[in-house]
Length: 398
Image 1 (tube, one colour):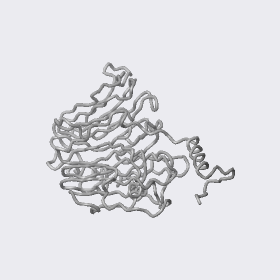
Image 2 (tube, helix red, strand yellow):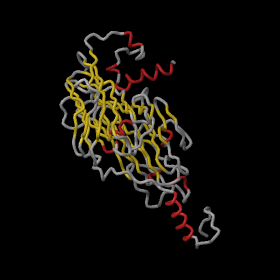
Image 3 (cartoon, helix red, strand yellow):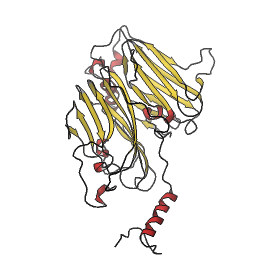
Image 4 (spheres, helix red, strand yellow):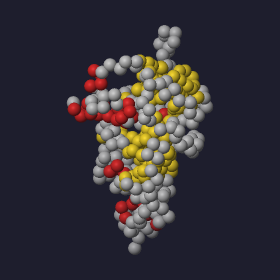
């Protein structure tokens, strides 16, 4: 029970001490404290006629819809969304979620709605973290408990870029109307980045199987997780990796460079699975409030898709002027991987504008490697070995 209380209390920590009205107590203990001047409100897709048609209907491809436009000061406390038809018919990878605080013209949150809530590759599967969850049925109920404060206004919108109409979009946005926000309260941000990474010219030499390993002494070609300017704290990421090889994808180190510091920085990690609080190249489903493997590959070795998450509930990474977060794609960035992340953080405004959001073609997912593909690899290898009729697979050129 103590572990659960500490986990729930961590939601306040994510937003920072400015929102912690019970600085030494848990969130559950906070139920015993009255909040004068605070009112709980909701924006939802309920049927205004009193009927049971509780949804936004028929969102055509290419259209944007406003889910909420709320006057402040206040704080969004909970979001719930489900969409019909479900994946794969309507791609949650191609519905874009954006959030704007106060009267800013560029979004503070911009990501595919699936990846934002912890659902990768237009798939649907359960996830149970502290600030985000994907609940029954089959991960189709997407939930956020990130606190999202705002001073004068909050706007949440979605864009349909699926190539077809969305039949039904159901949602709740729960929020509190507050008398005021403390001066030091930061704003919630989330950014999606997707890249098909490039192997090194010397090949994909992971674990030194092709020869001596090279070194990465700059971090220059790392996969970028976040590039933040301002004051605040980073609170976590969803990490989606699709590996076209059976080799372990996760030797790459994490790197957080705070306030413009050069490589190696003061927060340099030792490997991808180490950053995600796991070890020894796992591919086991495991979900903890702070970290976990929500989706793992079911193929040979580490071939296929894996979704990992970590939230810095009790250990946010604080910065005063900037933060650059990155991770190697294999040791020395030697692997071709289809990588995507959604980074989450809180910071003062204004924030550095995000790069232009990738169009549907640019963010297209790489296809699965099939058993037939692997058999063709074997056939090419057999031919390279002279086509012997009893070649097994572990032979090497003489």
